[in-house]
Amino acid sequence: MSNPPLTAAALADLRAIFADALTTDAGERLAYGYDNSRRQALPDAVVFPIAHEQVVALVRACRAHRLPLVARGRGTNTTGASVPTSGGIVASFERMNRIVRVDADNRIAIVEPGVVNGELQTALASQRLFWPPDPTSAPFCSVGGNIACNAGGPRAVKYGATRDNVLALRAVAGTGEDFRCGTPTTKGATGYDLTRLLVGSEGTLAIVTEATLKLVPSPDAKRTLRATYVDVAAAARAVARIMAQPVTPCALEFLDDECLRLARAHGGEAIPLAGAMLVVEVDGEADTLDAAVEAVSRAARGDGLVELLAARNNAEVAALWAARKALSPALRTLSPNKINEDVVVPVSRVPELVAATRAIARRHDFPIVCFGHAGNGNLHVNLLPRDEAERARAQAALDELFDVVIRLDGTLSGEHGIGLAKRDFMPRALDANALGFMRAIKAQFDPDGILNPGKLLP
Image (spheres, one colour):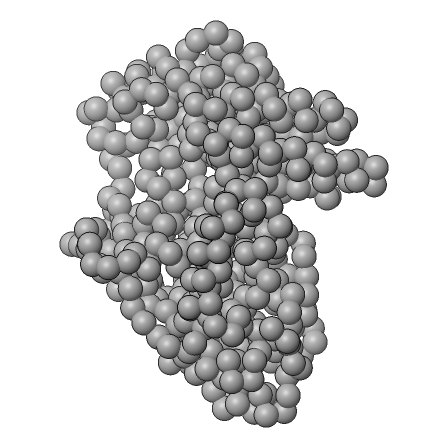
């Protein structure tokens, strides 16, 4: 698709839709042209929709003028998915931020895409409900962005990621046609599942303007355990044991030795130094929780266990989680050029993945640290090149990492998505026919290729 400049005619059409909710100011355009991948590009204009009908008109105007259109949440994604690399229009959904309705009887919430995840959780807490996706960026990220990237978080091990917790959507395809898909019921067998197709499509098929979310009752009680091990291999084997027994934890987080050192620097001496650590959380009814904790504890014990402790109070629980959630930004203290990959493998193969990352780090002679959602097999493998020579070796190390992940029956991303960062690796994860079907789906929804061009598909 050729990308023409923003002509006077196109700008006039957009101003007719948005009036003052449109900017071409260079500074503001710059602010809406980046994301947490540290990639940046300059859109020709930024618009701020407040209603579904405006989005319909926007898509139709962009199609008529052949303008690229990138839907943007809060820019917290790490893959470049919201960077307007082809120029055109960025639609920021920060003003479409209404919680339209919470229906506690049917355990659903209807929201606009600009609702911030953390603000939604606060609103639901008074009704003893929550929406399961809980990425580290929850205080800042939007529900629309969660939907675009199929965000997860620690709770996904028990409650699923975004795709498992969205029941219905209202959206506008790249043709300018609006549609609804899904149903506000937890069961439905009526045609193709377009809702699950759109979740994780990174704004390349349609722009979501409303979402019906599946809510979960807040558990009565929760217990947090801390298990330390002599080395990462012992901790990885414990992950496999924990996930092989009947009690599913609501979080199972893995931190290697370097992560513990950083967490201790940020969270204080309450964080131990060890070869590796698991943070395990179990929730449920208060009168059944002791048995569940004991079952998980039995699985956590084994060769290489150093210490197994239960958090004694809310302050200790908060300290554990604060340290874990500070890790990703803390790693930039080791390497401003860190490469954060969220690869995923079957849980039983987590030990092999951890061993392979250690071997890659030794072979290329720079730090690689691992932490993340081990209960899903979803580890954040952070490559930390510290100078130009190490940055040059990092690309070869990344290639090896993805080869290992595919060999272990895993895939490129568990929750961050593909965007620009992993687009060119897609042929390793998917065969040519599967990619061909994806391109055909893209062409059906967005025949002129105006929606988030250059992302996800190689």
